[in-house]
Image (tube, rainbow, N blue to C red):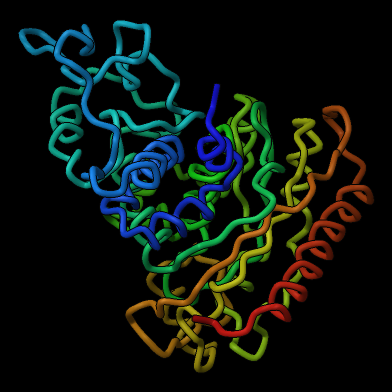
Length: 373
């Protein structure tokens, strides 16, 4: 039987737990999963003087993964009731869970060892679960302690099967909204899942960036990549505004641009996957745009001819401002059974419905905000 304290903590969202952990001064909170936060808070609130930090730790030596690579044993903590670790005994292409037993930068040596041993496989799109988890640690640092993201509607994220998450886009300098959205899907729902984000051409053209992007779970903005993700029953993340949303001027902040030609809705209808509209507030002020320049865009196209950009934003600051973010997952839109020939008019109607829902949520959230910080 759970105590009243444990029941209260069990009903709290990850954001509420983080707020409580911050107020309690718990160290290491950014590296904790929801269950670890609940356990650490229960320990702290029940016996504050005896609290020494996160309750989760490495598994005993006899509960380590039995997988071997030549003369080297894996050594990662085994999953409960099994002989293999999460890296070798779970499908980390869809679910997300700490490979080394818990999250945190102090786990990087163990992860780098697994990267060197190479005893696991990447998926057809290049996802490397070890590199993806290391990116998750970086995202969590920004998510919890820098942008202090709060989330509502996490119950609308599909717990299983394919789904399309369509959000408004902004950023100007770096796609922080993509990173924060993937962190929210990994941290907040009761079933933490991996969000496979679709990126524009430039993420697949820059040295090192393209490699890291693929290894972290990103996908190219092509129908084949997107349909593979949905056919496998994974979550697809899209920003239908594209470059027009990412590079828009500050005076157009939180005014959604046209959601393309409805390509994301077409994909969802072909896969029979629900569409979850997502409203993101905070991304527009992270790198405020001073002005946009068509001349700079032409220079970019000289270097990257395939990059579709008509105007390039010139932003105010190189370092992102510590703006407080809010992400709201709206009620899913059911597109019906999968079909090989979606009706074109229906595609456009669904795309516009998603855009209007996101815009209405943005208007409400911005009006309720008292300060960007």
